[in-house]
Length: 174
Length: 174
DNA sequence: GCAACTGATTGCAAAATGCAATTGGTCAGG
DNA sequence: CCTGACCAATTGCATTTTGCAATCAGTTGC
Image (spheres, rainbow over the protein chains, first blue to last red):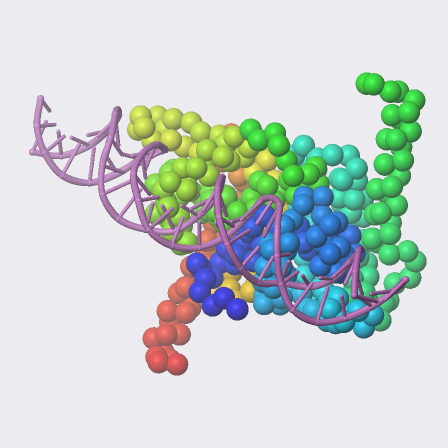
């Protein structure tokens, strides 16, 4: 654990945690993509993280208390990474970040539909999402019923992809 | 302006904007500290930014549309930096980030009182803060009256500093 | 056995960072 | 006019971090 900080300011300390180009990407893929294995994170990330960087960040996030690692019973050297409450409580920040990015940055429609749905769902949806994640990663008994928030977001994503594919068929070569 | 992005994901694009150790620190000092000049930002930051990094980040933030630069009429080569709406709308994110850091990271009491007050004030306080900033940086007519949010936060900070100094006098060598 | 897959590690070139010194220009006081 | 303080940067250089490909040893299914 690092003990030498630039300052005790909360924003600075937060930046020391994920003020880099990869840590939040990994957490995003775990939270929104449901990724839990090294290989899933390595091959699944659209941004193309390198394996040494992934290994380093996973280690760092564990040291920071954002992740825990456990053996996969089905596979001796397969590891399962779990989010801690510290990481799960980032959901509102990720929701705001996505909403801000959607307004101000050149996002693609497919990849921003999740952010849009999460923004429209507001705090109730974020709480349901955090409850889902606690259930999935911490074994907490789930209070809510119905489809998981991740499934809802995924369905929205697939609807956009399907619509765009259909549009491309009917209006080729725009 | 950069046109090559790793992906169109809003979170990724947001990280490409301030996924580094300094950009958000500069915006924090401008938003919460009211800093508008190069020298204020250089000497005022507790974290001790280097002048070349500051110059580089100011340029980058301008290219990204987060800041604008104007000549200071009182001083020919003194420049005044202003926040754009794009930067002002980060206030809720900074508030969440501060709140998260306050819970999970080893923050100092003096430097986290602002985050605490901003968290307790909630969205109404954030909106007042953004209104203040629009008035200050964009010249928008201010709708709200009373002390600025920055002044309120600053007063809270000074109260903590004064209390701690008093405690140190009455209970020396803890 | 053996190929495929697991979570990593290594080596190396390229880029980013931190730090101190310096630049060209402006300002107020004498 | 000088002069020294101040202004927003820029330069040079050593250190650190990053990106990328190749590689590692152990495990699994066949």
